[in-house]
Amino acid sequence: MMVVAGGISLFLLLYISLNTNLFAKEGNQSMGIVLVSVGKIDRETIEALKDNLSRVFNRRVFIGKEMPEPHYAFNKKRNQYLSTAILNAIKEQKEYAPYERILGIVDHDLYVPELNFVFGEASTKVAVISLTRLRQGFYGLPEDSNLFQKRVLTEAVHELGHTYGLGHCSNPHCVMFFSNSLMDTDRKGSELCPRCKSKLY
Ligand SMILES: [Zn+2]
Ligand SMILES: [Zn+2]
Image (cartoon, rainbow, N blue to C red):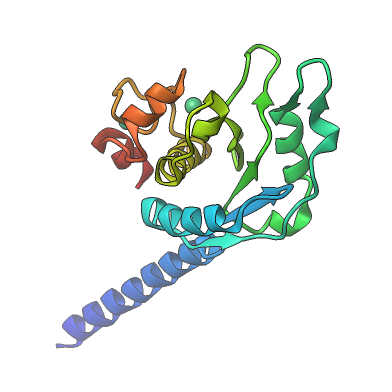
């Protein structure tokens, strides 16, 4: 009997310590994802993004303090903003450091030197997305707010997916497929394919 009882308490002890580790892990993640407006962003867009990202990544999502307009990233010759400069400016903000991931949202057209434009850019912990080319109005078409919100979510999930270690996916219906144009973005939507999903969780 003694042996059995000892076995049970050992089991309980192990179970408790396993649980403690689990809580410790959850503790690190409890700060979740923070959304940061870099310059003025429509509040409704941020709120919708907050709810949807929480569902996709199964994380708590917060709205952080707004950052000023990113004048430092503006390139007069290109009339665009250097996304890497904005990423770095976000990284320097100590108040966002406790969060697991940080997503900057910019309403300016972004570029990196090798490309005409980018929808967004990601590093290991911080990502940034631009809203500019996600509006129908950019292409001279009538605005469509549902389509706009869907595109914002798709780009946000894609860039955050990179920060969680996901690469580009060859499935054109997976959110991690590389978007060359909005046609790609609209076709793929904001869902992860089963293979990418299994890597994430
Ligand atoms: Zn990508
Ligand atoms: Zn995929």
